[in-house]
Image (cartoon, rainbow, N blue to C red; front, side, top):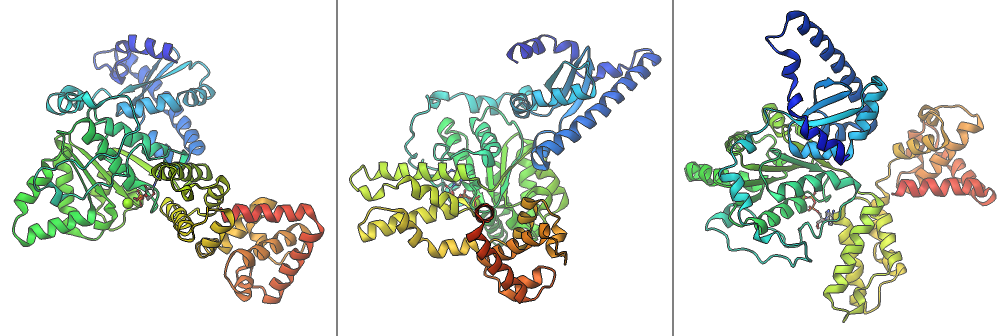
Length: 511
Ligand code: ADP
Ligand code: MG
């Protein structure tokens, strides 16, 4: 791959952009031919895109491929254009082979795919003056990564403390565990924090509550401050932004307000969904946003949903928010949860310096927590803290039984979150029957048994009453549900295979 890319560098000029295919002074016939070629190419690209979309899912596709354009092709080499370097290197590292293979399937003569920067996308390169130099000059801090102690709070220029919100010293990149669900957001955040120029603007981070958005934003802020302390980084919640704005309005101080915000190098606004429906705050935010991005300053925004889903926020703002890089954080998976717990447990035992052995958490306890607390990372940390607090309170080491005991309420709460619909869907999927059969009156064993299992699991895993469960299963009577529950209980004792199926389903549903 390195080889191929070197070659790409060399003949980049031969293939600078698509204008070659549309050269205005070329003979008309030639032009027609080229138009046709480009059209065919676009058709192929269209198919390749559809495959990528189907394969990778909407979110990933939108993050990386939406802005990709086909520029031209020559002798088995297809050139695609991307708007930013970051997107280019990410696609090269992760998707190049896939794109090539798909393209080959459309056109066997295609041998390589090159990703190049869109020619017009060079503002940060063309004017490297203030911004770039500022970011690059004091690289003294770019020491090899060492276990970094949380930074002491740096002295802030007067007034900024007031404007922004303090950064949590625990929210650093070092303390952020990367997994599949957050790898894109982490990579983007990291790329921004490295700070050489504005790679994409804004960075829009979104995901459910407690999944690490604020952590990542603070990590960016810490890292920029560490590398380039002279750059001003302002972090605040959308709520605080609004508060500042309203206060400025009241004290007829909006000029100073605007000034303050427009002077920063990096502006981060957390939980932007908060300004939904707040028209004048939105308006002000939009002006600030535009003023900053026009001057090549970085803006980072987070929300609990994607830009397109931000109801109550004006369409032009929503669309502008999606222009940069949109990175979503998905719900966690088991590996990530375990990784986070292990890191946390380790740092706790380090902190107590071995003196208090009570902080040592046995691996089975961590595994238990990772398996059972699936809602979000904040609750996961809360659960761990609760177990530790309890152990130190009673002066005993942490054990699995203790953890189960301490967390009983919490676990019951998370069990309640399984819905009957979900149970029906999973069971239908597992036994390969139609979802409709869960609700139908069909009595064939092949559908009746899965239906009974779904009823049994609904009784076990939800707090719904028997009549409620019956209603959810095509309006059946509660006695049918009782019968199903008894039947499955009995079969679990007699039939080890069925017992295993039920157990597997239960575990899948609880996670
Ligand atoms: P959000 O802003 O998305 O609601 P936060 O950033 O406040 O979530 O994260 C909630 C808690 O989970 C914080 O204590 C944070 O440190 C922790 N956390 C989130 N993601 C990670 C991660 N990948 N690694 C370690 N800790 C994390
Ligand atoms: Mg947050």
